[in-house]
Image 1: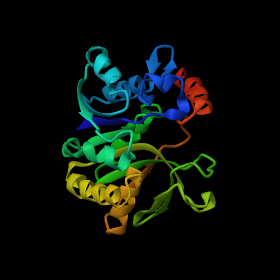
Image 2: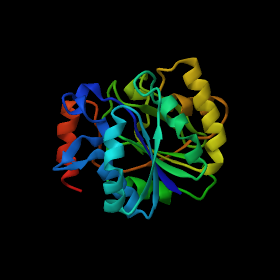
Image 3: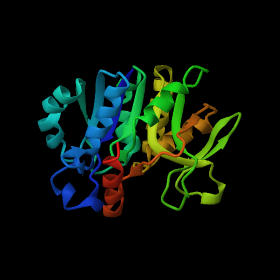
Image 4: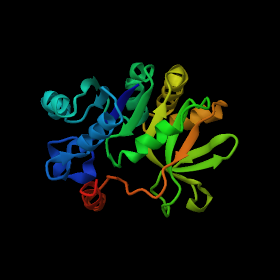
Length: 245
């Protein structure tokens, strides 16, 4: 098993920080970045290799690669997304399709979360699940969240932002455990998704899988403090949360 981080996005709503850095390298606790927190989580659960999808301002990640490897005891492989500033992240995750064959814990490069999330996903393995989404079933939902409807027997039924919050079981927080045996089917679903519309999310690829009859499971994370950092208000929340870890 390896870690996989999507860190190719521009994060334009976080300017001026992202004038020179990808979103994943924006500091959230002193010099500690979002990427630092994720790599620290991966190291704590015993992973030794991590692939990072890079694109926007990727040279900043390349410059820090050796220092991050030394700090966290991880071997990092950087994978270039050649369309990071043109297409959405369905294509970005597809760029990491070879990494998924090893079984991965995927983390979005803008999600500040504690290691308990990864531990919850690992604990949920073992009953034939191929893809397990970390799900917040506690948070009050609004329009912007990636909302999920779950059937207790059939797993995920819908995953989209475009849903009445009152219909949702919870919010997908941007962390997934993907078993290697799901790699080929997921890669095909992602390809179908971005070929249909390059602006679609990788979560739309999950929906494509569900539509094909593939079971996608969830693991509720409990009452956990986390945040997806899209704008400066989110960054303030992330800094408040990160210093508590």
